[in-house]
Structure formats: C-alpha cells, structure tokens
Image (cartoon, rainbow, N blue to C red; front, top):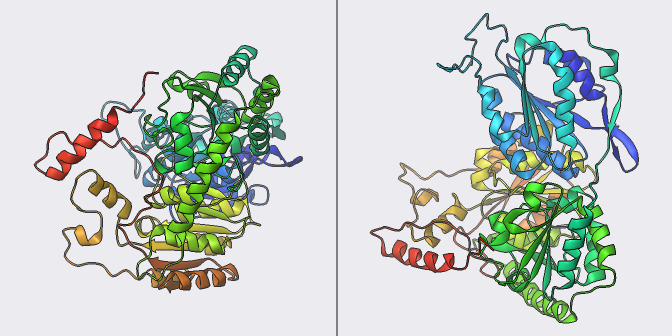
Length: 608
C-alpha cells in the first residue's frame, strides 16, 4: 500500500507557467516506528520521482511545506510523514496554520495497527470508551479532509478525494491520512489506471450573473469605495488584474497581511496595510468607505479593527471570494468567484464608471503623510537599543526589490505590515492567520525552495528563535541559504506591551519580569554557529547593514543578531483591537483600561 501511495503521488502534475510539473515537490519525513518500515522503504525507492527531505522537528517540517505552498501560490505543495504518537501530534499545530490560512499540505502520520493484535503499541493513545480513537484524531478539527486507512484498497478513494481538496480553490487546506502501520505493508492488486499521470489545473470559478449585477450596481452608487486585497489575490494570480481594475475605476487599495505586495508599495493607489496594524492612510479611507470590495480575504479581526474600523453607517461590503463562507460574512453582498475572473467581469460590468477624483486626491494626501511617518520611524539611529522599526529600516535599505521577507508572530508582523515596502508580488511572506511562533526559520526554507532565485530574509524575535531554531541545521543540510536577522529584546516584548496596554503590570514576558533564579545570558551567535550557520552580532544599525552585505555573498545560511528595545513600537497608524480587559480589578490601571475598552466597544458595528 505504501508503494502504491508513493507511486500515485508521483504521478500527479500541475500546470505552472504553461509547463507541466510535478504537483508535489517532495515529502518531508522524520521516520520512526509507524512509517519507517513501509512508507520509508517506498520513499527510498522513489527518490528520483518524489524527493524526500529530512528535517529536525515535525512541526517545523510541516511549516516548511506550508510556506512552500504559499510561496507557490497554492499551485504546488508538499507532503509530510511522521511516526505515530508525538511525531504525529507535533504536526497538529502546523495543520492549524494551514487550516486557518487556507493552504494545502498533505499530512501522512503513522497510525496504530488496524488489526489491533499488538495493542497497545508503543506511543498508542487509548480511549477507555472508544476503541477506534488514536492520536491522529487530534487532526480532525484542523483538517479539511481526514481519513484513516485501515485497509489497503481504501486509498483508491481516499487519495483522489485528498487531491481534490488540496487543489480546490474553495476547499483548499490541510488533508490528513492516518496510515495504519500494518496496512502500509499489506499488498493489494491495484489497477494500473490508478497510477496514470493526471494534471490538476487551476479552477477559475466565474461569477453568477445575479451576484455580478448586484455588486456592480452597488459599486456605481459609491462615493468613497475601498478595495481590500487579501491572500486570494495572490493565489488566483490576480495581481495584474487588481492593478488594472483599481486604475480603470480609480479605487484605492489596502492590503491584508496575506495580501501585502499585491500592488507595488509605490503605486499611487496603494494605501498600504489596513486595520490594527494598518497605515493611517488606509485606515482613514476605510473609516469613511461606503463600499468595501473585499477580495480573497477572511476579514479577520486584525483586518477589520475588530469590526470597529468601518464607521460609515451606509457602508456595504462586497465579498469577492471563491469560498461562500467568506464571501457572505457580515451581511456582505457575496460575489463567489475566482479573484482574477471576478475582477475582470466586474470591470466589464462597471464599464467606464470611476470613483470621484476627490477620493483619489484624499488618498494621495493621506499616503504622503504616511510616507513621512514611515521615513521617520525607520530612519537610521545610533541608539544602543534600536526599535524594531529601525532594524526594519536597515533591512529595507539593504534589500533588493526581488527579495522576500519572511516572519510570523510577535511584534514584527505589526511593524512589517505597516512599514515594509514590497516591490514585487510575493515579496512579503508573513504567517499571521494563526500567528504561530516558530514558523519563521522553517517557513524561510519552504519559501527558498519555492523561489530559489530570490533572496530570502527571515526576521525573527528571540522568543520565536528559542521556540524553534533547529531548522537552521536543515537549511545547511539542504543548501537552502537564508539570511536570518534575530531581534533580541530578551523576552516576549510584544505581549509585554499588550499586557501593559490593558492595564497589567509587566509579568512573565520579559526575562527581567519573571520570578527567576538567574537571568539567562544567551549567546545566539554561538548557538547559530553550532548549527552550521555563519553568525555574527551587530552592535548598531550601521553594523547591521554591513553584516547584511556580508550575508548576501555567503555560501550558507547567515544569522545576524541585534539587541532591540522591547518597549518601543511604531505609534503612527494602527487601530483599536478587541482584547477583553477585566471588569473587576484591584489595580487602578486595569480599571482605567476597562473604561477605555468599554468606550471603544461602542464603535463596533457587528449587525449592519
């Protein structure tokens, strides 16, 4: 069965730039009991047609696979296999990352014996009331499709269904097939047709005529429309269509975390990021917008300012999305369609209609003011402890237009969303749907594998680095050269700031505010060097820029460490975020924060 599974996967192809290429770029594998004997033997024999990559952590290898799929615009993907028990459950967090972000990854964890003869086997989870439960059931709520293979012939149905989900623009997400370890090794007389080459093509859903008419009619009535570009713009390959639509109809564009780089940062209609981590330009226009054309976005709370951003009482959302679940959120007019196809047909329907010139003039004025704020926040400094924004400014000055910046959780996503200036599609790769610490370095590997000709710069805080750094060694092993900038603020600076903003005292986030026996003095340079990287410490922003130049010509992954101020965040831009503050507290600061919170709640518009 394992041989049949591998042969089937190797036969799946897709169209990319008018050429047919393997749909699966390879399989990440950490072997153990439950997958080494059968699936391991099958992968070894098929290494020429389906490469196998070794990682150091199961969660991290799945992050790399997810990042590869995202950087490939969901056109290609990878599979991941583990042993049963902790090897399998280590991937559950990564499965949630893929689920939230609508990204394809095929998870193949080993499972218990279907015949149950040796039960309980090593690492088996036993349920006292349900004999069918195994650790792999943890994947059910974070998988788009879940199956447990208990007979060898079941893959005849399970694998095609898995591929349908992985390649469908609306259903897309993680698929988990629990592979019972005895069944992997069983023989079955599979039909030869099962292994025939298949080419999976991008499905472009055309809009319904009635929905298209309703959307066009509402837009033509708009005086202050705004486009929100989400990740679906990239996955559809709709960046050019978005640019043409915005220019033809004169509508400003704001970008979500996943949508950033849909338009070049210097395009006159690009207002930058929106929402909690948004620019002042985008958020001012969003506050007044009477029609919001939301393209390929889930409209999560960071995008909508916890639904307090859109304050125009007459505002109407038009949800252009392949997934009806997302298209109709918050009483939106749904326009269920592929982003590119939907924009093209909506533009035809709108004909020569354009938004008022006054809106574009306002957008230009707001963007000019914001550009000044960015320049001020990211300017070089001689401070002993620079801010995250000043470090971002140094990396920006060093970077080329084709470079890709990668990051995830903590304070960096907010600062990067506001401040990073992306010039090309795909130049901004942030995991902020699940905001998963530890994604950064592993994600950088996946991005580099998808885009080997582009420089990949990973920006990571010391907290995330300490959570998952082992894939530095994997990057050396695979030759996926990265430049990794570690911003060391000696703890969880972002959450410390949130803690203080909600009235709490600094507690258990920064090292100095823990009940510690001793403060650690972590040598990140020595640590990264021990994993095989070229590593150095920059003691100023100027030294950082010099180190970045050296990293660009290095023959392997480089790690640059710089200490930063944990208390400073960019004050310009941004918007309120709904973080519940206790109603009862002995602390005056918490009571004051609660009063401000209750006032802010009045701005939420949830039912209209």
